[in-house]
Image (cartoon, rainbow, N blue to C red; front, side, top):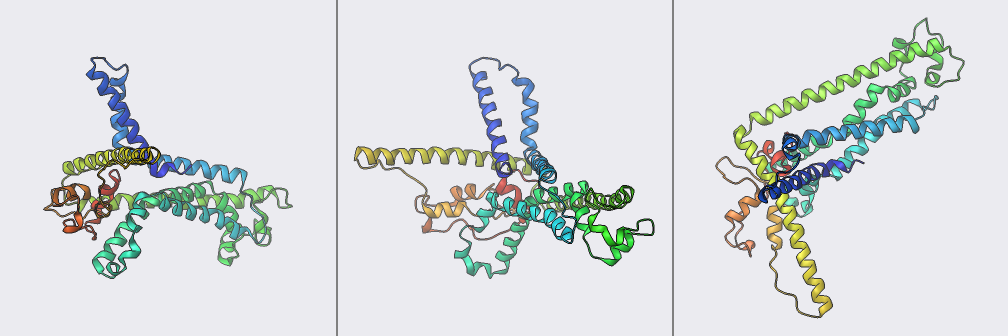
Length: 356
């Protein structure tokens, strides 16, 4: 269900594009689209908030997955395994979600594809620093699902409760247990389970303290993440080399360029496949068909190096405007695509609708 992560912006963009095309077609034929005027504010809001809606959906799906796991799969062993079992159930799914987020991010593969062939460049400080900055940006986005899992699990308190009842830490047990709870020091690991000889009132009191501590940690984590995100966004905007209005235009351009590139790539691939299949079955020579050379694909697949004096809005924009021979781009390397610069701008340049 977490496949929505990387495809959410594409699906939302496609839906909005289809609805707008239908709207303009009906307008062109002189027909008033029924209900479209009422939908225009909703479509505009959805388009502007694609990233936030996508992140919200990720958090909801993570919350749903955590609830299902805690209800149907989680069962505290109530023995010496409590600490290990509780921490594994709390942290390992978060690590798995982080790895899955990396794997489902197009920007991850854009960064790592062909990296082993550029080992010498990694030794250069500027390249290595830029690489680390971009990877940290990917990590910030990928942390949405794992942090959602940990925060929701802490607010619920079930995993933390199981873990801490198995913690063999004298200081913690001294803090938790007192004269009112005689079974606490010797049988604390049995407290999460029903059907024990421990009085229900004592179980409830001790577990309430642990659960309250878990919820406090959960809210501290949520507040810390929100504050960190806010400060990081402010810092990125402070060092932005372009104005607010140009930034909005840049986002719109990169979004449209990505949509048209996907559409045109699919059409070109379909035509090329159809030509080759037709040539194979009809036993004829294929009709000559132009396609971008390998060097061109390499140049537009890198990250865009922004300079304040540039007037280009993407690496593709810069390539088509500066390459002297589009059919043979290897003649002169007119696009510098092997460096990283201005990491604050890369987040929205290459994925078009990120907040950083």
